[in-house]
Image (cartoon, rainbow, N blue to C red; front, side):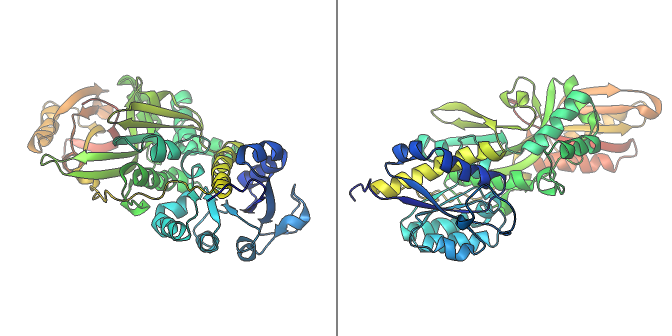
Length: 436
């Protein structure tokens, strides 16, 4: 197909929240630069909003409350979906793709469930489906995995991909405040939503983990395949104890190949709060920032760091995708298609080797440590470190295990909870980022 630099690329934007408003602004402010980068003018055709009466910084004639008609217009080449949620976004994207429009979206919840459906629709229509902004805001992670590392074998992708939870855990670590107080402060500062469930219970991070795992391992992974735990049970005492082991606590999204003894490969995708050593690169990621570490067979360890949310940062990633899609419209190219050739099975978390941090209140009497250690020995779980604190009614044991299947580790915890000598298992967290 020959280039058509004289054509105008029409763009429709669905949703005008913080990100949508920034996208609209940048298209208007950077019109000349965008024309030079794309090879043709880029023009905003319309913006779909729910409430036409609300004042907005865009010409009134561009606003519509009929997104279905907007995405089907003949003068629209690219649809930028920033509404969020599953419906009506799913149907609108399908309509856009079926009408030959390329789509740019930041909708991680939708992609974590329906990437296969949407990717198939894009392939059938021979158009692009881009979603860089869906994983880590301004941080370029999706394109490096899909393109820069396309010739390598990715072994592991682990990161901090939710700014709200990272802000909360960082503040707890720095101030010693408890979870409830820090969550309230995050809400006052605008880092936490009025209903923070999607963030603090790990749903947001799990959706992003599903997207990352799908790309990294050429296997279709959905949010239901991701083992998910949130941060609501993390206490200030856990952060204090972590420091004594030269660690901190982060909510991690981890996607990795699991190699069985017989050589079989499976995928583990999981989200949970975990201790990581202070020497690990993710330990220094504080506040609302995000970071993703990719480990590949030949490239080694790569780290991507930056602002994982916010109107302007996320809009930057959206505009990057939009420019790529527009160039393809002008010059006749297409972006990379979904790759699911590997179709690797998903490993349940029970089978994944992990390490545990366990804090428990115990009876202050001789032989307790031996009893506790005996439960681990029965299940072939080795104890790496033990710390005894307090005395009398405040006697506590804190221990770290060596790597063993998660099932064995959790069975040890269940056994501890049934022991008379263990008055309470106060906290259980995993330990990541170590060579053991």
